[in-house]
Amino acid sequence: MDTFLQQLVNGLTIGSIFALVALGYTMVYGVMRLINFAHGDLVAAAAFVGLTVYTQVMGGVASLTAVLVIFGLTVLVISLVGVILEQVAYRPLRQAPRLSAVVSALGASLVIQNGIMLIWGPRMLIFPGELIPAVTWNLGGVVISLIQVLILVISCALMVGLYLFVDKTRLGAAIRASSIDQDAARLMGINVNRIIMVIFIIGSSLGAIGGLFIGLYYRGITFNMGWQYGLYAFVAAIIGGIGNIPGAMLGGMLLGLFNAFIAGYVSSTWADAFTFIMLIAILIVRPTGILGERVAEKV
Amino acid sequence: MRILNRFGYGGFFLLILLLPALLDARWLTVGTTFLIFSVVALSEDIVLGKAGMFNMGHALFFGLGAYTTAVLNSSFGWPILATLPLAVLIPALGGVLIAGPIVHLRGDYLLVTTIGFNIVFVQALQNDIFGVTGGPNGIFALDSLRLFGKNLDSPMAIYYAAFLVLLLTLWVMRNLETSKTGRALHYLREDHIAAEAIGINTRIHKIFAFALGAGLAGLAGSIYAVQYAAVSPEAFNFMQSVLFFAIVIVGGSSVPGVLIGVVVMFVLPEVFRDFATWRYFIFGFAMILAMILRPRGIWPATFGRLPKYLLGGERHGG
Image (tube, rainbow over all chains, first blue to last red; front, side, top):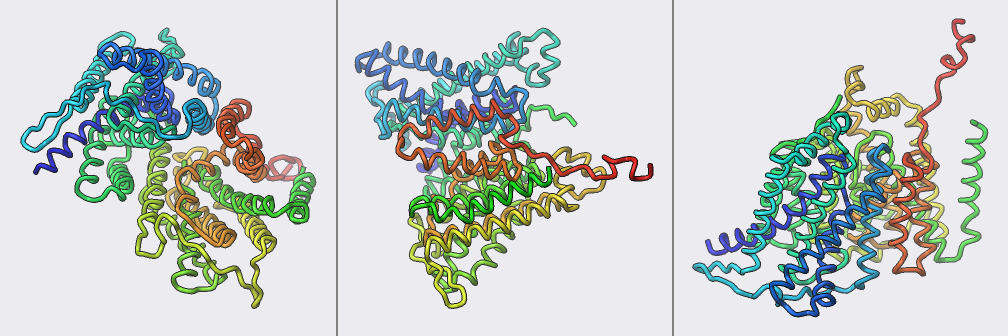
């Protein structure tokens, strides 16, 4: 029972990180029908930018201000990179065959990944652990750390905020309209280019926060970790139904829990295989994810 | 146009035949791998380009062929030549079994399941499934190819063996393009609902495309295992599938396009090997640029030729 509760806590922590990153995939897919393969590498870049902000800007002194400045600046830098990414690699291919944009995304992924390597080197760097006090609580054998609580609470708050934003505001309505039919949205006076920019800013910001969480939680960061986390987050988005915002949240949590239980009960050397077998099984039974996609298919 | 086409291929074949005389040992290895990768990329083109299914797990079939040869040779002592038929059949069967439950999935969902199968495959190899795959290190010290009692273990012999397989693949592709099945696949890529409406069994054709692509990739994998006398899981991981996928799209899913794609995506990075750290940074930009400048690929496919009676109306019933 202890293992079960412990893995539940761990799974929810990883799951909220997956969900944050998955939102970036699903929002871009919803409007552009594009798998943004570079998103995972933006997440990895965020961890490195955060590390540099801490050592260079804040002088390596841990405080609440330091944490806030790190998050603020990193989100700013990464959303800027996200916007540039869209302008350079995706905008010129808006009218091109869909697979051209996929290859362009793969190219962008290589650029960002190797850019990280050129700037920060190929070796693993260690994210500062002193940023968040190492407080842990022992609840009847289950160990919960402060960072786990923070990750869970902040992620949930962000997701609720995003859901309300997309569902209740005018800009959110414009985003939904653009994802149903871009041309009709344009005819209604929506500036679709601006919507896409907003989507990249939101997606990259959530991804950046996810990347910082990865740094804070796992500590070790490498230039190529974006592929791993990106792939998992993408799987989470698919499981929930791509283009579907609550689906990405559900998919992320499910995937995190599944991973934690596999690691806890079965074996970690088969973890990836089990994850993908689950994914394939879900897609065979429900071809468009658990909650279904929110993407219109025209015949 | 036809003459130019034939001339182009003639020149290309002559170049490939004479190339080993000009290459040193390292470049001969690159040349052999170029031929093998061309076969895999063309077989991926059958699934991705011809049938229009987003397959990003093609390295699985490549690896299945390589491991079939390696396991039969190292664990069961089969001569390499005897393993070749199974190195085609097992991946082809694998293609049918894998494609069967998933071909009805739409575009990107198919893409992610094929990635999934590729990752499951590589992890199974790494965990030494059935105790014959040698785990993360793979299998090494395979026998060399023996034909009529002669050991064909020189790099030159393997180069020509790979060339033979490429010729076979080109022949299959040519026949496919002019056959009923090829036209059905083409139609199904353009509009699968319309294809179904005129009575094309889309499911059978999609599975057939997977099986054919998998079989050819398996044969290429077998030669790949012979070339290095070894196999290891990383050679067939998901990144390798991404490479074959990108080759087809950058090249433009025609035969010359795919071959150019292999040169651009595999041979050129080998040329710039000295710039190890900057290589892939620039390579990524090149991929973006290639797609922006040539959104349909470097040498886009033009399907078939219109039949003569459609072009010259006066000769037919006029």
